[in-house]
Image (tube, rainbow, N blue to C red; front, side, top):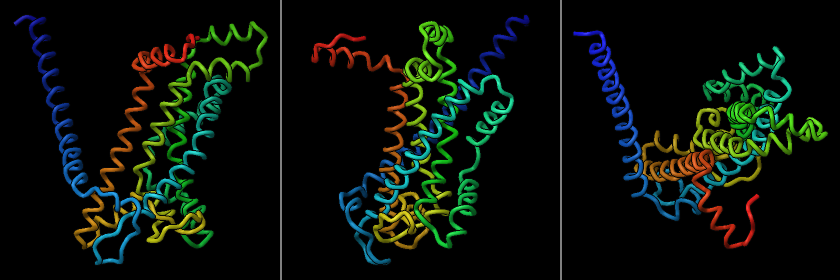
Length: 295
């Protein structure tokens, strides 16, 4: 057998092996999604969203405190995490590119992306929960913001580095200051990629449970006070799954279905924005209706 034939056989074997491993992973992925859709959609009802929970053992009710609390905590985490993450990414790409100190911070940010979420929850518990003496919704938002921040910072950094240096030099040649170049040239060129990172960051924190167990904990009543323990969808699902009542399990399936579909929708939006050429037909339609010329 010639060397060329051996290499071709080995290449085909590795290709077949890669196909089997990919098919194995995709099979379990679709099995999980299929089980979630079948069981979650079956127990889906409008009452789940606008009714309060019933006392343990009494069937009925809904998860309104969990939905409202989860929306409040996630929204506040997004408000805190997105601006800081984007500014950190700008500093990494535009100001700290030649600094060893900030390159070290950049490496630490890479490590933070893979930090277990429960560890982040424990840190926030020691800083914001234990000194106060009780769980609170604000600490949960801070924990989620810290989980989101490195994802957005790294994405912003990488997207800004993809902007050609010639665009910056052309702006400098016209007499623009550095902050004007970043704001009006670099950020505009990379806005789609940055927005993609923001959406992926929100999608990541939307399904977190461990940090909220250490921070906001849970609440069976509807509250808007961030100084009190606040319910969240993921923690409520965790408690219901571990509970003894069958209707709790049914509500957990339905809540998991809603949460998964929401995260999936955010991921799809991020992918579409990343490949923005898919939106060009829509842009042409809008421009033809409004009569505006594309710039």
